[in-house]
Length: 141
Ligand SMILES: [Zn+2]
Image (cartoon, rainbow, N blue to C red; front, side, top):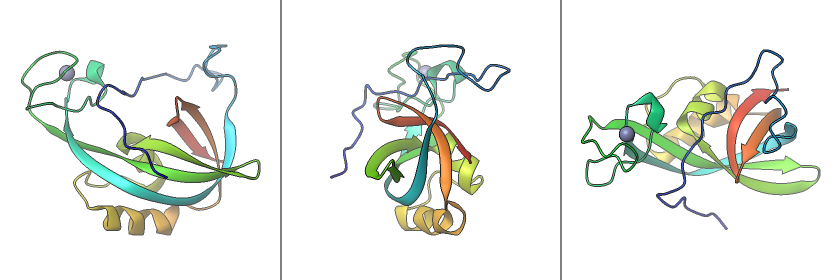
């Protein structure tokens, strides 16, 4: 039921404008409201630390975006199950968004530790934006 990200899927940074919207970008029509159900399949990996590479996963210690051999920076992603309008949906969520909900944590932690951390704080209903199944912005509603 869970899908693992392929290496060429990457997180795109989309800054909120001053109104808290995405400036009419048709890729980001509205936030979705969903109730958090669970989290699984946390995967830690080494990423590129350059801001313009958005924590791209390293391949053989090299960044596929900037092609530089860089100091590996721990990062990770997981699957988040949300109930949206009566349907259960699975989304990918990266370390940055996850830590915005459960607080900063070591990306190298194992899945069990992440799930325990999340269970304590990641509860209830959230507003979020997603693109291609990845949650790119999330906030408690
Ligand atoms: Zn890079």
